[in-house]
Image (tube, rainbow, N blue to C red; front, side):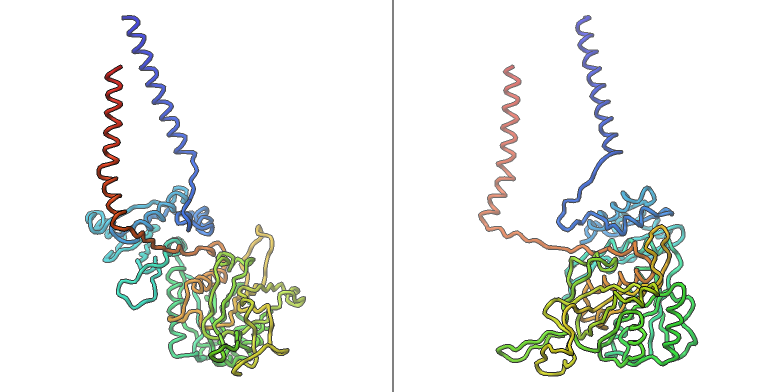
Length: 481
């Protein structure tokens, strides 16, 4: 009996020690662990811009995934929100509510937020402020005429981070877009206002029209002024209003130039700040066996050093329509004395040049034309402080020698990202630049009839039979012992 009690006590102690080690390892792994994202597109990694913002989050945020579980983007949304919860330092609470299966929880969420929730989406709430992100804000679909358009990009992080900023900041910023100066086409300005308005809903700013002929000054509450594709020049009075606004303590401007526009006063204003439009056309021309070929649509490369374009530097862009080159004077002593910093943002690839005689059948590069480097966009900053510890808001402007970036029919997602990054930079929201969409890829495996039959028999009979035989061998071996 003493020997049996000793064996039992020994086994009991071993079990206790095993449980203690098991619980201790689990506790340590819960508190101290590392995670790796091994997906090719880094689908499960938040951008540094979002992580930086979450690290300074000062309010509790509630986020609900209100998509049915059979939705095509349910998994992407749920995975994304989990990343927000994990990196939110306890500030972010996440809930998943299936509006089809969880009727009671859906009704409770409706009562809490005051939203109808008649469509799937993501609900973001801080206190009494609520924002619903619809499915169309989370994805970019293929530009086809089909009813069911395939999803080609998932923009969830951009939309969710913008919504969090929206409800946390509360007060919306204001951009004014100059109207009454003509446009390339009747619908081009409408397209631009629609695209910028959509960005505003995501980035927490409102867009208002501004006719400079009807006011005596740029509104004092303007966080930025947009000049998109002006066909006719500003008057001396209007240029004076623009100068007064720009010379304030905090101002921002986005200028999308129409190369066909007659705007000498606006060009002179830009030239004083280091970016002079050349009134040419950036193109590529060659003689082929079928005739002359002129290409006005320009392939561009984003700058690697600017905070605006650095997140996009791995992508190339295409500027539709016509573009004019910019004389970017980033080494000008006068600008340095004025504490103005100019930086190129987009450059044309090597085969393009700035052509003055672009109406010729076969233009060739001559002395009056502009050779490489060809700049298509540039940034201007006044009041730069290099020491980040003393960082203050500065006056910022982005100039682009193309006004077709936001045209509905030719708009590219990368151009939309560039405009969004430019607007955030103008608002001194540098921490929000760098949230890029995740590409969605579809893979199809073609199996022959023979391969399908092999998979069926292997999974249905061979593998289960192997496990059964192994179990019988183990049983027989223990019985013999």
